[in-house]
Length: 194
Image 1: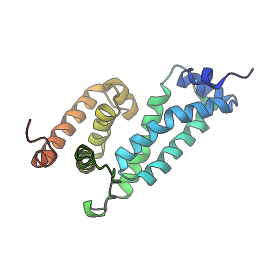
Image 2 (image 1 turned 60 degrees about the horizontal axis):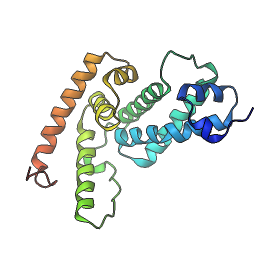
Image 3 (image 1 turned 90 degrees about the vertical axis):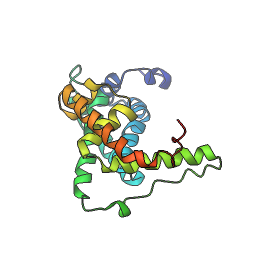
Image 4 (image 1 turned 45 degrees about the vertical axis):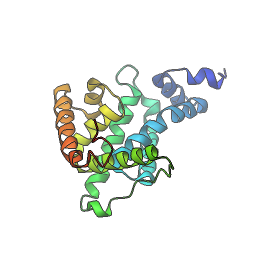
């Protein structure tokens, strides 16, 4: 029985993964459409390199496809599992590149916005990415998952395989460090007149 693509897209991640595990290609397409951008966005924020993030997101999705036939429903959310895989893969890549200095870090793409607000937003995003890159990996993961991806503390705890209290501590320390790193640039980034 073939389902309409719109009907397939309304199914839960877990149902789509089970359908894919049973050979449903439309379910796989719907999951990639839904989870691919999440994996890519998280990878970009963790790595600061769009090309490397694309490779990492693809690798994470491939791992999801490999486990699809063996997925045990009700044990974990598919998105939480994927966040964990992306953060683990990103951590591995960051550890391999530890010797890279800030001057060698990839530049973020220029937004090419002509309006002043567009330039300010680009400067703010670049400043945040540079500051995030200076955080310890676990703090960066917690801050990105909480404040940029919008996950709850229990979801982050599951993705990082730590307790909720540890998530709260990592997030708080990460935010404090980001504030210290960005404080000297407040006026330059358009926050000086608050």
